[in-house]
Length: 234
Image 1 (cartoon, rainbow, N blue to C red):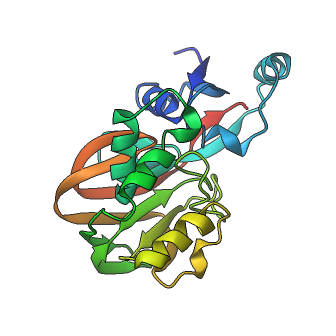
Image 2: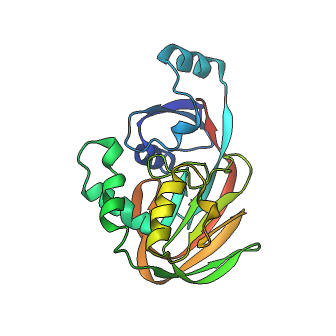
């Protein structure tokens, strides 16, 4: 099959749908920012139309890792369960057409009422069983429309970054929301961060997972990094 180039016009959700329906082995891709979160494309300076066209013509390809979630779903930026996925679900339901408020409104509404979930995390380098306010796995630094969940993440290092938030107290929640905006939340005791090429996460009962701003049902999830799976021109 002849190689072609595809431009995704939208945000993280649009790009998520694209990479899960495109033959990544025979296509290169670009993203033109027009979404609510735009966390993936925030890793690059927004190009002008002429500069992006020139980069495509010259074939300036970067290879980016993806995360395989189960057998069917690929993730380019962030996966999450617990409060993370709950906020994603509410953000869709409450979408008022104002991008900056899409995630902030449900966070403000439910931050102090969300009940932790039971999880088991299994990997070669990190294991945990117990309650969790949220568990997120990221491929890049940003998630949720600008929060720096994984400030040291690199999108082509062959590893995914895990963030576990154990059940926080009232003031810890306030501190987390403030510090995560600057990538300083690792200072909090209820925060644990690790990195690995693959892991398995099991929820105590069936729930939902957020994948790049899209929501899916889940309970037991096997995840692994797909090194250099995406051929990006940005």
